[in-house]
Image (cartoon, rainbow, N blue to C red; front, top):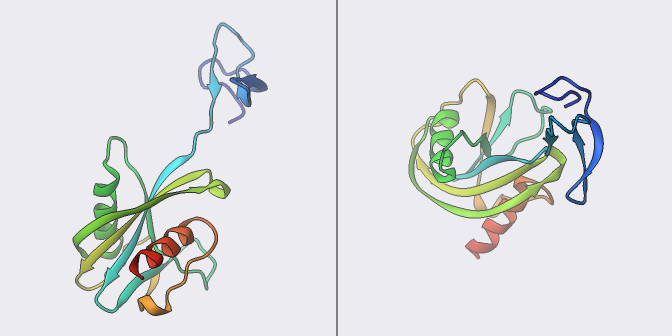
Length: 158
């Protein structure tokens, strides 16, 4: 954000509560852009044969990950996990449980991850163009974002 949404002045780096933030230089306005992280819900969707890994249409061709979605205003994160599983994969949610909460500084997000047991036939929505089912014994996490949730969930299974 480069301009104040209240008075249109250019924002300037300002020390606010011991942090450098973009703020309106007009003290009468007082706007501060905090740039708080966006909450994202991630789902480790487990079917009988393994975990659904999907490819988003905007990602590099070989990159697959677990399902994610943005938390809506006033939405419970667990309800978001169920809604996104149904919307993105067309699956029926049988149960869901919290895995953990993870920072994803690279995207200025905080990830709230759930394990979702589901049933049915995968029917991708328009955000996804491919998927694969990875057996739990072949699944591996990675060292950032949703990969941290996968690593923790697999450790809980042992």
